[in-house]
Length: 131
Image (cartoon, rainbow, N blue to C red; front, side):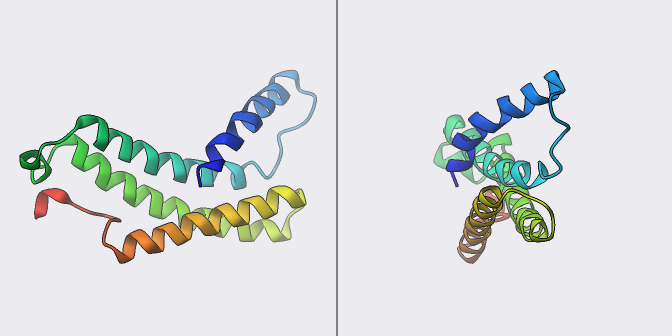
């Protein structure tokens, strides 16, 4: 899943360059790249906010901004993972480059698998302040 962040370091500047230079029209399959990337970034951002805040054992049981950020980011990750899987399988019927399609399907399956795993362990939608 972290390869989506590395991959975005290459395709985002190329996409912006193409938009600014008007050499090519906007690609129609940009959604299959953006949705999995935003899913990964939402989870990473939520975990980073939680880790950087460094909550003590007393703060974990209270409703703090870090706990709320973790709760919201896991829900957003789950929703975007499902949307990513839907968009990647919808791309089977659209003119998308084969390598982009395969990468997106693998990335979407990884995000959805992680969603299932985190849901099984009760991390998706975890409200630390209720325990």
